[in-house]
Image 1 (cartoon, rainbow, N blue to C red):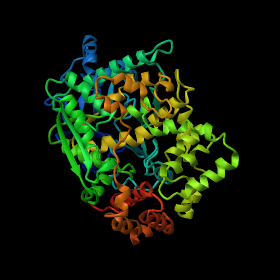
Image 2 (image 1 turned 120 degrees about the vertical axis):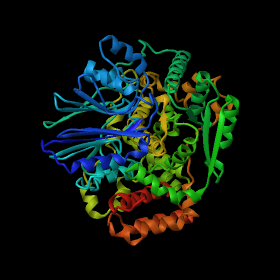
Image 3 (image 1 turned 180 degrees about the vertical axis):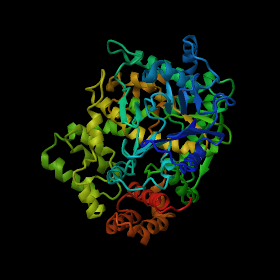
Image 4 (image 1 turned 30 degrees about the vertical axis):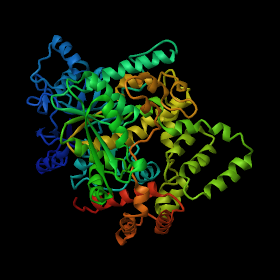
Amino acid sequence: MCGIYGRLSLDGEFDHNLVKQNLLSLHKLTHRGPDEFGSWENANVFLGMRRLSIIDLAGGTQPIWNEDHTLCIVYNGELYNYLDLRPELIQRGHQFKTESDTEVVLHAFEEWGADCLKRFNGMFAFAIWHIHKQTLFIARDRIGEKPLYYYKDSKTFAFASEIKAIVADKKIPRELNPKGLANFLAYGHAVAPQTIYKNIFKLLPGHFMEVSEQGIAITQYWDVGDEPQVTTDRVLSEDAYAEAIRELLDDSVKRRMLADVPVGAFLSGGVDSSAIVALMQRHATGKVKTFSLGFRSGGGYNELSEAKQVAAFLGTEHYELEVGNEDVVNLLRTMVYHYDEPFGDSAGFPIYLLSKFARQHVKVVLAGDGGDELFGGYRRYAADQFAPFYNKLPGRLSAEIIPNLVNRLPRSRRIKRSINTWQIQDPAQRYGSWLTSFDKEMQSSLLNPELVEQLADYDIGWPYDKYYNQLNGKTAHDSLNRMMYTDFKTWMVDGYMEKTDKATMACHIEARLPFLDYRLAELAYQIPGKYKVKGTSLKRILKHAVRGLVPDDVLKRPKHGFSVPTDPWFRGELKEFVHDTLLDQRARNRNLFNTSVVEKMLKEHVSGTHIWSTHLWLLLNLEMWHRIFIDGESV
């Protein structure tokens, strides 16, 4: 696991001042790779990496060259099937100098070109410079576990694992992208390929790009329904699907335990993490180390007791961390710095703390991300099924009377969202509405008139129109699978993968996600939605698959997730901090927002007449991002 950075001069001119600048940019990624660094450069190319040593601790130093020094690679990630590919490459005549997975990637590219990507099972982002072709080949893993950003103008192409390495160059402008701002306000995260910065983009998952002085060509090499490795000619029984899931998940866990350093797991006490730990125990030579976090606020913000119960049942070596609100203000600036862009998922905060805690004991953790998107774990999947029934009610009742009554309720956020969303007829737009914070109308009230005019023709719902109708394969017309696939392509990769990667790497720890083995993803989208969600029962097929591995109570427990008590914090201890940050003169001088709208939201939230905690968290992160990345405040 590493942080990578590179630069290509597109005008053929070599600037001696860039030598120092490239090393400075690479230094910005030290937290991703504190163990060592390496770089190579010639007249127009620089490749660099910061390494977190996981496999082949002594011999995996990068960059790595092929035998005749025509190909050079910098690589971030883990290839879980590299031991399967290595013997075949040796048989084909390739010579290896290390035991690392990085060198397997390099020789696989030398042998098969871009088609090597279809042979890989792993999480990665890498770049290979081809000396003879004078071309940079850059690829990102199928699912999007590892990030890859890039910048291009007429003279320069730069790429990195994190944006901070790119903008460390003062010549690269730090300009706000209005569309990126609209995406963030809508969903709480960037929507790839756009970012919050003008002219800085994110390579989509399952894509590769080729860069030279002639330009950039981007190609998609994978989607879930293309050529699934595990497939059937007919719909199977629920038992057969459950057996296939369990078999693949077990193999995925086993592969992700391969490391030359200690491996542990995050354990929440829910179905996903509990199943992963149970399978880890089968393959471990000793007790698996597990880690859990809870807030002292208690209630729905603390799952330590549930996690402890599962840890006792499975016999793990369990560690607990309990935190309070005193950590929030001090850590918020740190979190904003590590995310590079304003990031609205407050769960990044506990994951960062848990990662820092776990790093005292292990260097790799397995986590349960991805199970909800593959197997139907979100309440909105069930809630959306009631839309057709709601719309059968008399028009005035469903469109006016019920919404007006519900909107008068002071704190019924979920009921309000359901009623307002069910009224939307188009299924793609309706699904996007479940996940939208500041919708188009709210943004028009919040943003200054100039920004509103710039965004007049911009449809913030485009990701949902695009991906809802893009699912291919056997379940392409299954509405439940369409919703899950849309999350898989948007919410999960731009939100959850971003959250997990940045929070863990900030603490020098590698997170591996067994549910996101691409074979499991391909299988999941062949399974009819009726096997995943029925009525209000969620993740039915996965619970069937792991029955007997985890306590029965876990299978009956409602979904919880990493909840952060921003609602009570913003009405209590953090009230003044939020008010002073969002409404001080510096924030006003940015002239982004109608401050009267922000003042109204703060007042309503503090009084308890409306819950605006999610929206206020977005605005707070945006302002802190401005202070650090635009104003240049130190962290």
